[in-house]
Length: 196
Image (cartoon, rainbow, N blue to C red; front, side, top):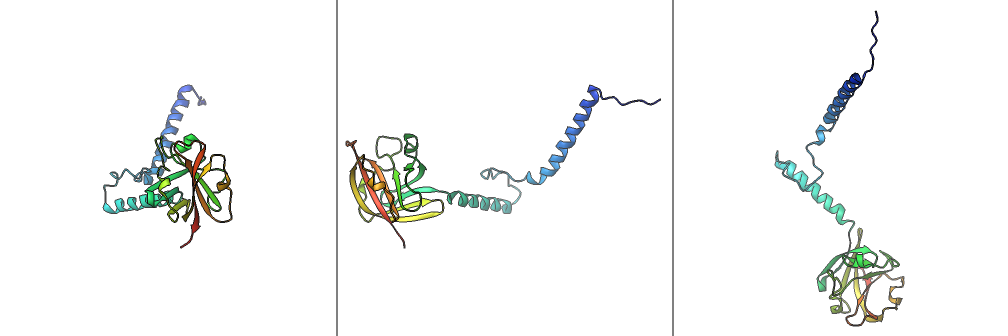
């Protein structure tokens, strides 16, 4: 007499359980070499087995910083101790956290236009730009490009005057902010790129 193996609910559950255990076992064997590494480079307590592993971990952290630093978008003006990140746009959301980039202007060559608050907000990056003089230096970093500009223009313009933000063949940078107690005017600082 031939007995047939029937797939009852119990048999299917047992087969599923055995199959799941086998898969978990195989995955743990495959992933075992990766268990001693961590994605969070800040957790160095894991590397207790030797100083060499800690040094390798520190090198990996430094290399990560270099990669992050190569994508920085930043403005630096040493005379007024300004170093701040730039973000796209000039909305209040952007200007409350960053220096804003006028989207109509280029980011690397031509006339780069930037804006920021100068008083009355949590972040007032252009608070001291009125102290700048002709000849002062401005440093602009976009991705892996760092440029140096020298200030050639300081002026007060109407809030409707966009001439200083027009694109130019020369590489320039234009900083725009409000003028205290004069809401219809803007302070404009402009520099031209210099090469060493």
